[in-house]
Image (cartoon, rainbow, N blue to C red; front, top):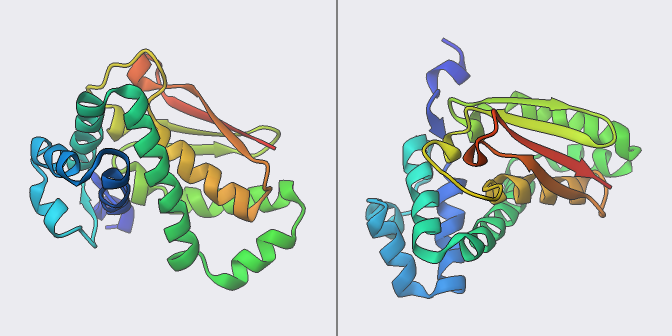
Length: 199
């Protein structure tokens, strides 16, 4: 059984632990604890997970954020958590020699190399969803059957956590002016969550 098959339906803990770090700053410690309690994840609040977690837990937390804080404030929290996730990946998951090389390559080539690495490890953040990426100008990435959007209904794209993570990585490793825009979202009724990365 491959690593991806063995962990289907599970996501890396950053989607929970980084929210736990930034939520008290945005909403206060009492509200942060309430959000985790309402999501049924009080144990994760008290003891942030360090291993893969069930994707349904991540989906519950992010949905509860929106229900408790409203869409705009939840989006700010999710973006802050996504940026912090990018920082974590840069500090602990992407080898320094690789970072050194990517920063010195032409942006288009660096984007191709980084996309290949993201695609290889997509099971760690897309869970049972399907990730795909297309290099170019703009770079396009897609998550189909996105676990963070299951059962979620929104008038605006809701994947701020993913957008901010991609943006942070690309700004540091590909081009400092990278902007990520979610152009389609399953929460809005689209058939996939799609992002464009431009610089």
